[in-house]
Image (cartoon, rainbow, N blue to C red; front, side, top):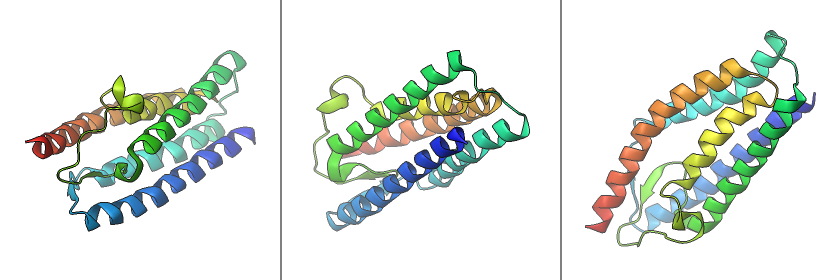
Length: 169
């Protein structure tokens, strides 16, 4: 029951992200923002929906136990990942999005977590994708999501870096 509540809270967090992203997308488009990488975006959405569905399904269907020595540290990682994600969202402000959208002429953000990391939001995504299933020992979901996410993030980071490079030149 507690794990279902955790998954439900993460789903609500993701819905909040989508509300922010939609509002920011409208703002970016009003400023001439250009979207890049539309083809890979549905795959990212599918992977994240899959994570949120597969983790509790694995726990339920395969009777995965809660292992305190694993579950509590993984819960801490999930909470820290949410904190990092929302730090990124707050730092980028209107420029943050779930899509790759660049407003021409705007400088790169180099404050907040972007002082130290080029793509801190993806650090949060990777950490959460591993930790959320492992809170309740859903190791198969953690493994599959991690592999799928690695492929998708390889594409995503390449698209994002190319889009940002176009804006700098």
